Length: 615
Image (cartoon, rainbow, N blue to C red; front, side):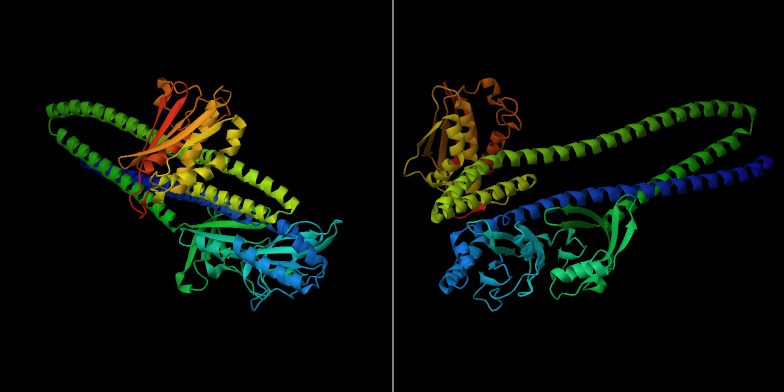
């Protein structure tokens, strides 16, 4: 017995060393996989934020892109460009540019002669006026003089204010270029919207120099070495005026397929230290910019370390359990050596115990495999849920924005005709209507972005009659296309409703458009909209003379993506969105078969006072 113990001790040490090596290998592999998984998840989040940031920048720039061309086609501008010595004409143009600049919320609008001299500007009354300044060296002026619209980012050499410039040539009746119109927009408000987020946003020019950043101390630092060629190009265009440029003190790290940048958290505060950021980048071809979204990887690395620590604890517990089991078997073996009879019984019991342990190990293995499959299925379901939410959000935005887009197109066509006729007052009114519709589309986008959280809109008193007049304008094209006639029965003493004006108008547009689809091709194409007040609530009824709504589908008609229209005729989201909005207002919506046709009823509370409350 003593010899057996002496033989077993080295074997136990060897097994312990082998187990320790296996655990160390498993922990190392788990650590690598956990860190790569965390970085991959962070990169996916950064890419999503990047797409949203690029889309927002594109939309903001698109608002001003056509303004230089529109201004350059005006007779007032052409007359001054043809006769720059007319002082009265200059004064009138300066005042007009100042008024338009205030309306457009741009930074500056100015007119430049072919020799580069500015003869009229919206800031003509300011101390640092552009009037008399020469901008012949600016790329946006050079490109416009070559006959094409241009855009350029830079720091104003006169004002010292950063901005983005749009320009377009002014042509005479013969088609010759006689001047250049430039529109400058400020970028400080863009940066203000990025601050306070978990993401750091950085926008660089074609040479890699940061000119927009959520971190002010990063401005005018380059991601690449400042070679002589880069500095010469920047100096030639005077893009940054007299502002000195510097290189980022950055270090590029290997993130296992994910780009990692080690940067100071703040160049102005060395005490903030350096951070490792996950970087996602996208080029904006039209603007010539590259947008970078950076996500601090510290939290992700902490999560990975926590996962590795959990793995170590799990393996330690398993090893401890195995050692306990082995020691127990050793004790039993020593006791069985006392007598042959006891040994025989112990052998039998040990055999039974071994079979039970084998079954338990098999069950544990099966349960672990099942748990792995369940986790994989949960991960897939989460991803599918995210993709479905994004798909529904995109489909909702496309559905709700079609009507304002159609109305904006009508106003734009009418404005072009009025400009050709010289009726600028009515053309300006049309452009104002287009801007109102753009604001409405922005409001719709805001509501859709808030779909995953509690909305914060304020409910107040909304008069139905004025809102209905604007709604007629939006749905006018659809009514005319289907040959439908909208009849309204609104009492003059109808109390205001407790709702939000933009979303209530969205409800009316969806219901009227749905009714227009229903009566298209019918003999009786009347659509009747009525409203009655009773007991502190207002009932809005909308009836068409179409095929009606059978009882079999009435219960499902407000479900998302449910539609009775043919392929390509609709997404089945209008009534679902409408029902959600009505419920947010504290109201009810229902539908019944009116024989012929269908009648939708929306019941909303009447406004009792003018104070707003959260929707």
